[in-house]
Length: 304
Image: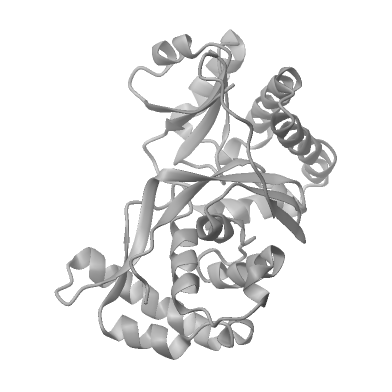
């Protein structure tokens, strides 16, 4: 019985694109948005679309030999025929794990009971195969975070673990914050663009020898509460993203990105694949943020 278990959205705090090339990544639950599997006999357009998407998903799972013996496909398909849909507040194409939450909910509700699912790296592998229906080549990190609902540290493609993030200091002016770009991105298209960029030997060298190292250092210093060095890492990340990932930056935020670097009052980075959705910002002084983003949706993520 599903019991309408809720699955929260997630935020890829650090590791965008790098995780594809075996960098570290840090993912945290984001409980503002959530979704759950439900039944409806009188479906509206949203419910009909969701039900149709689940049907296509179930066909994919049925044909996937790796997944076939781990999910009760027959029960899943029977429930779809009885009006199953995914009721969600998670914005799509925002980098918040909308498809990851669907995968987590389906796995939780229709998994066969076995010991393998208890080992986190095997679980990631299963969820990766499942989410590849939506993204073509999923790392499995999004659905894993949505399923476990705890912070996840990716140390490599074959090694992930649950962690605790540092305690917040609510008396500090230094913070990470979210900015809503009020536009959508397209993960599949942007990831394709990224792989095309890797064909350029100069970009490949920069990415593998420089950018991945910055990501790893940023995560390490954040988790170790070494915030003075973390600040330098974040600024470096912001500047090099601006220079080397122009295709991934939302057009309506490129000027704000540059302004932050020039006035040194805030810095921006991608949150996921980019193109829209949320951006993650860092500031030394929260009081300055509203003047720079007067008409934007700002949410404080972490004070330290």
